[in-house]
Length: 203
Image (cartoon, rainbow, N blue to C red; front, top):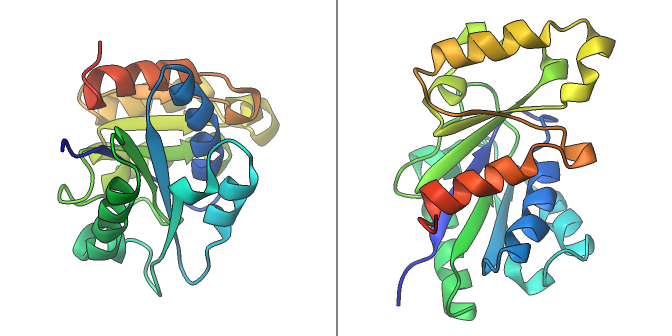
């Protein structure tokens, strides 16, 4: 049995990780991808319940991992609980191709262990400030792809979006920087194209 690819999705609290997951589920399903979801929260299953209630995916395909006091512990230092959840989903759903592993909200230092994620996205949002790329946090710099979300908020929060995008590209040495407005489903197809090409190797 071929193991499902594991796509990590990390980023600060409120950056739009769960909203991105909710947009990716139907977009990937429309391309015939057999997928499941794992969400990480500190001491609740709130994000998992939100995805289950969305009607976008069979609720049995959504598992929750409680990270405890430190959200990045179970995606970096000891990803065993997430790896076990991935294994559980693969046993339950033969032919599974892709598992989305959403991290609990963390800071710019959050990264994924390569034992857990084959590829990982880091989500930041415009409302967090256009100085985020200049801070050069490991999540921003090291992620396989950086997602800048909530583009529509730039004029409302005094952010120079063009400068933010340019500085993000400068610190990432040519690795992808993708732009989204998850609320309006903008930019999602570009992420699905990337997943098809670089994670599932289908195009």
